[in-house]
Image (cartoon, rainbow, N blue to C red; front, side):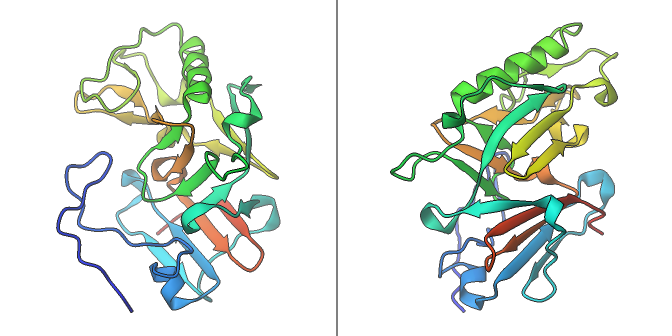
Length: 233
């Protein structure tokens, strides 16, 4: 078993991270070295507890068929998903499929990555998401994020998570609604901020914050990913 030593580990949000567990399909990853064909993890939100789990091999939890979406082949052993569109407040956004699809050269696409804190959407798609959220919450005035991490925030005392528009990611054969608590985050000023960001290139990442409190299962034999909300404790 080969394990590297990181002397300077950084996260996209925190200044320091103690390390990274590699769970990709690359031969050098923890999963690749062990060689088992099933992996699952479940990460709770802060209000649901502090214990999380990664299960490899027979203990891994792959949930039922209606919670599954195909896992595509791609570069670097990463987990590519087929995202067909995004809805906000029940309305499908007019985002071309090309924003989410891989190119013939294998660039772009949608990666599911627990090592990326927040979902990143390619500029053309993010512009549509941002505008739809702003329009749905037009009674509130957005403010800039003082932490410079999130696209916009709200500091209005009337703002409630329960009244925010639902965002649904339409994966192939799986519609996955984002819980309001996985869509918004409080910054250091206590303002509610959109926890989805614009990527710096033509790629998309389905980040960890957006699938908290969900069991995520990878079945390499059948090339599927399962996503189902559950109690992670």
